[in-house]
Image (tube, rainbow, N blue to C red; front, side, top):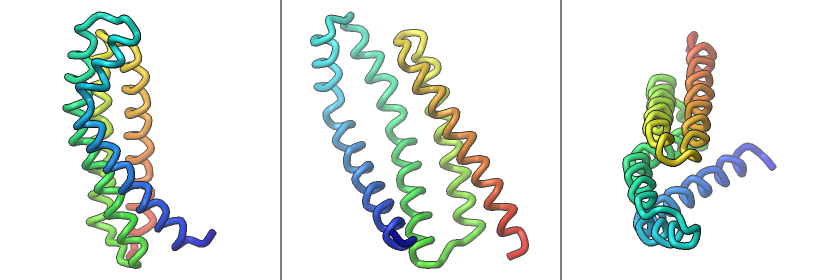
Length: 140
């Protein structure tokens, strides 16, 4: 698979992820209520999950839209160091914010600790990639 096909597939997958995110946000109350009833959990869990997921959704959208913009710039051979590294920085900050939100919610629902750790790890990886990109394009 050549580079252009890989980037096209990544753009398509990012678009699909955005659509899934919107669908998930619309259906969240129904999905969470169904999960709580099916698992026999306390009714307050539904509120906890929704109070955690809804604040995270806009940050997730920013991450996906930023990634999509970077991929389109690479596809079009118009990678701009300043703009695209700024997008990487925003992505890292959004991951960090999601990590904090889910960390706070983890005291009410333990699986959110795993989500918090995952997004913290993603924030570190994206920030490292941003730093590497800054160094690679320092002379250009």
